[in-house]
Length: 332
Image (cartoon, rainbow, N blue to C red; front, side, top):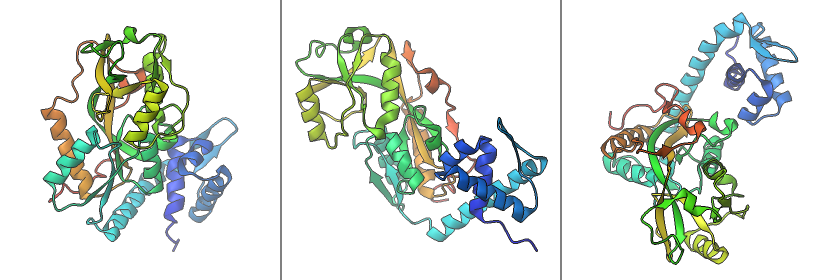
């Protein structure tokens, strides 16, 4: 009897089959390309089949590889279920909410109220890129933010569901020439310098959004700056350097500064609930359920007249899921 293949080899096979590119698959798996090629050859020897046809220009599945793929996925799903059962559904769910004042924190608060028997532990990464790196490393389970600006190697580790379009705003010193306006037209910011996290590897998705929004409008992005930690340090740096800040309508109160929504057009920043691909946990089910309820009751997915989104965000599906990875609903 042929022994069952190592799940690690099956995972390598599935990722190569999805990417059809060994370099991209290796980056997604965080392994060297040579090591990935060795794993595929080992799996082919163990199964006595050829899984891929490799040329200098392309990688394609053989008929045997295509036939094996759905079975390999089912085996990996079964291992994920086994791991979840072994770890126990009562383990805390590690949820990154970005900041205490955020859509993620609101969803987390609602989930805690709806499922008081479950334990959620909050994390506070400054951006989704940092949180998803934590998801890939196993130090975070769930996060919130804009997925369109993430590198494909990070997106490969997660599923996501769109919850909200946050209106984008500008944080201004209270004595700024535009601070008295109820809303700030984008054209009025010409000549200004806005801080949008440039230089912070954890917030690359937000800096990418800012570049798309401000392109051709005569607004300057603040140059790369070391990561700023804590509200007090953030306030000190921003006020010292005289920056205004590209933010969202959900933002912490900063002493001496005022938050004003942007208009003409009305920029929207998508916020998705993002979780580790294959994650099974009743806490995730609770977050998904209350997130959907909040989105419906608060009309979070409405786009106001004059709304603007980067093309990449408009093209992202509202939900990307592996089909049931959230597990049982809380209490079910």
